[in-house]
Structures are given as C-alpha cells and as structure tokens.
Image 1 (cartoon, helix red, strand yellow):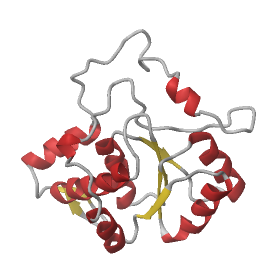
Image 2 (cartoon, helix red, strand yellow):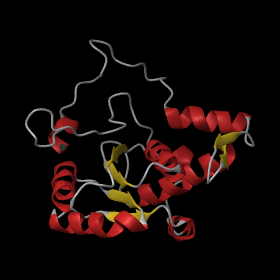
Image 3 (spheres, one colour):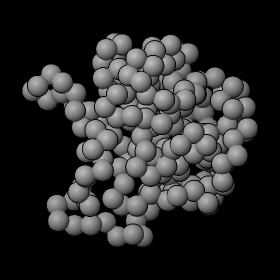
Image 4 (cartoon, helix red, strand yellow):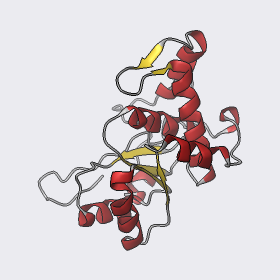
Length: 193
C-alpha cells in the first residue's frame, strides 16, 4: 500500500488535475467556524459547536504532527462512528495525513495485515480497541503511537504537551496527496488499496 500511495496518479479525476487553490473539507469547516463559531456542528450525546470542533481537531492534529503525521503519511483510526470519529477525520486533514478507518470488529489477523500494508505513523483508538490495535501494530512490526480519542482528558493532555507548529505552519496537503485510504478485498479475499 505504501508503494500504491507513492505511485498514485496525479488526480483521481479522469485526465483532470485539481487546481492548487482547492479548499479541503477541514479548511471549509474552519472557515465556517470562523464565521459561525457557536453554531452547532455535531449533535447527539456529545454535541459540539463549530468552534469546539475545530479547536479539538487542531489539538489532535498537533499530536498527530508531533508523531510523524503529514502529507504522504497514514493515520489509522479504529473507533466506533461517533463525534470523536469526525474530530479524527478533520485532525488528519489539518495534519495533511491520509485518514485510514478500520472497522472495530476486525480481528487480530486482519488488523495486522492492514497495518503492515499501510504503515501508519499513528493510530487513533478507543479503550475498546486499544489493546487489539497496539497488539496488531507490534505483530506487524509497525512503529506507531496510539492515542485513545474517547478519553478526552487524556488525549487533550497528551496533545497539549506536543510542540507541533500552529495550524498555519503545518504542511498543507496537495491535490495529489491521499486524503482517505480504504481497503477492499474485492474478489480475492485479501485486502488491498
């Protein structure tokens, strides 16, 4: 998969390259937060305003950047679909890294194969998935730090200790960079990019 990222075509659009001035989702969300900071961004059990969402995503991005995330790098995420999942996606955008979602029901062998193929620099996990993801990282000989993003106090404390540059100084992804990585087994039964 690392080879596939490096050899990716300049555009996913047939014969068309995206203009350099393209705005990414995380940038659009940040612009909206600047215009309407108190507007609700996420509803449900853990509601957040746009200002809160962007603040959390940038704080998480600081941790990711401090742990090697950036353009052409992969960040794995193995959490249930929740508010923190959205924060993680935006954080990867701010860090410039490719977001790689892993389903929480994947078994140890599947996780090991996927992590070995993608070589993430970090893994965003929950208490429920931390043990199996860190075990799969070790078994796959992948050196990546894991952060429990469901434990808000712990990850905020860990992120606050990072000496990453402010969001304006982070490497902006280019239209040729991968934003999200998905794996499929297709007809072979073996996951691939």
